[in-house]
Amino acid sequence: MEFRILGRLEVEIDGLVIQPEGTMLRTLLATLLISNGQPVAKEELFEELWGGSPPGHPDNALHKLVARLRKLLDIRRDTGKLSDRLLTRLPGYQLRVDPEELDAHRFQSLVAQARGMRKTNLLQARDIFDKALSLWRGHALEDVSPGQSCRAVVSHLEESRLTAITDKLEVSLSAGLHADAISELRTLTILHPWHEPFYDLLMTALYRAGRQAEAIESYHQLRARLREELGLEPSLATRNKLHAILKQDNSLLIGAGERVDQVTGQATGGSQNS
Image (cartoon, rainbow, N blue to C red):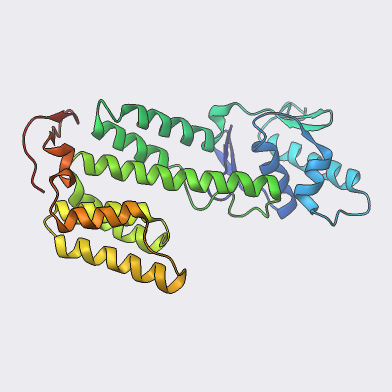
C-alpha cells in the first residue's frame, strides 16, 4: 500500500490508485497520515475537519467518516474483515503506516541521501535530487481543505521542495552544467518570483555561460520587481553576486578553478572559464 500527499491525495492498493471522495474523508486521511503513525485525539480531528463549527453530534459524524475510511483501505481484501490499518486508540484514532509507504517520507529520505552525496559525486547527487523531486505531482495536499495541523505540514513540505530544487541546481552548477540549468532557472524565477536563490543561481549560470549582460539584467529585473511590489531591495548576498559579476571575480567560476569529470561526477584539477 502507498499513500501520496505530494499532490492530490491518493492511496494505491494492490496496484489500484484511489482518490478518496469527499472533502471530509480526504481531510481525515490527511490528518492521520501527517501524524507519523501516532494516535490523533478526537478533539484535534474535530478541529481539522470542522474548525470552530462542528456538527451537532461530532462524535457520530467522525465515527461515520472513520467507517468510510476503513472501508476504503479494505477495498481489495476478500477476507470479509475490515482493514487493521485504522485503529481506535485513545484518545482518538491511529493509522498504521510504514514510513516508506508515504511519498513525503521517501522524498525527505532521498533529499538527505542526495545532500550526503554532494561531496563525492555531483552527478549522482543531482540524479537523486531529480528522483526525489519527481515524487511531486502538484502542491502538497492540493485537494484537501486543511486545518491548522495540515497547513503547517503543507507549508513545511513546500519549503522543503523549494530548498531541494535550489540544492539540485547548485549541484548542477558545481558540476559545470550551467547551460542546462538556465532554462529551468528562468522558469523558476517566474513561478517563484520572491525566491531570491533562484535569481542568484540564474545570474551565476548566465555568467558562466559567457552571458554577463543577461546576468546583470536578471539582477535588475529582480530589483525592479521587489521595489515595485514589496518596497524592498535584493538581499546582501544577491547584491554581492552582482558586484562579483561586474568585477568578473574568479570566485564565480566552477570550483574556483576546478572542473568536474562528467563520468565520475568528481572535481578534478584544471581551469574552467564558463
